[in-house]
Length: 285
Image (cartoon, rainbow, N blue to C red; front, side, top):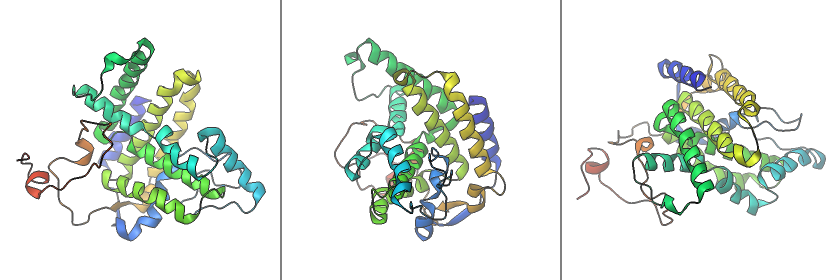
């Protein structure tokens, strides 16, 4: 699988991807597209790829049962409150990738000696998987998976009637803005998504008693869907990637190359800095 991903990445890097309009002009349409690789709906009336030009709403109460039951079984989502808790439980793969980068740089913010034997082994296994996948996705990490599946989660909740369209925008508009700024094209996004999906699966295998042979066909399907989306005439290839900052500045350190030093920090994570620092690369002070 890693060889297939590397081959896709090499091919994608050589493609001339179509650039779309500025993100602010296309944000509402773009929000639907990152969920194309998400898990399929268990309902024949809902498109397998979730559709990418409109939101899907179940036409009657009977139809709403399938996506609602799926949300409850997979994510424990039964209402708005549990919907907004779900991403913290199921879509934190990119945070763990940052743990890996900090761990590799010798800058972990927590003491691993506090882990028991099982916890330490699980952590090391998780870091080993991240290490192997980082050779494919580089510093792009797994943000695409967290955002893409998170958007699909809210689209299912909308289809099941658990949230309103306005609630959907409040929940996911900013996520779409983040990936538009973080990645440069659909090739980068797709590679990050599949790597994040693999990471999520393999770090959960021990808890769910799964084997590599059981999950390999599922991941192969994701690879095939990604190839179809990015092939000539495919949805992602045809629509292009939005320009987040059409007249933007070239930063000294790209966001994807910044390693968080204190990943558990809970206070505001923003500050003001001059171009002398963020563009020219001068040190603070």
